[in-house]
Length: 91
Figure 1 (spheres, rainbow, N blue to C red):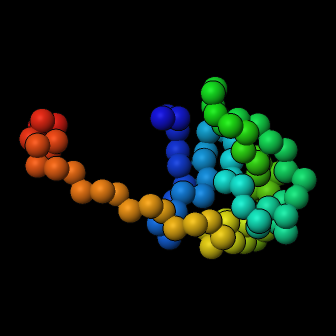
Figure 2: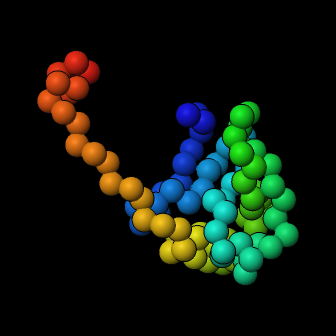
C-alpha cells in the first residue's frame, strides 16, 4: 500500500495524491491533455506515473484529463466473494 490518497471515479482508480503531487494513471488521454508531463514514482518501489502538478492551475484541462482517463481505462475486476471459513477467521 502507498499510504496516501487514491482517486476513484465512476468505479475506477484513476490517480494518486502522494507527497504533495498529483499522479495520473497512464491512458491514451495523456496524449491529448498532457503529452509532456514528467514521470516519476509516487512512492518508493512504485512504477513511474505521469505527474500532473503543472495542470493544477489549468483546472479544465485537469478535469478533462481525469474524466477521459476514467473512460479509457478497463472496468475494474469484480471481487470474488469470500468463503464463510475465511470470514470467520478474520473476526
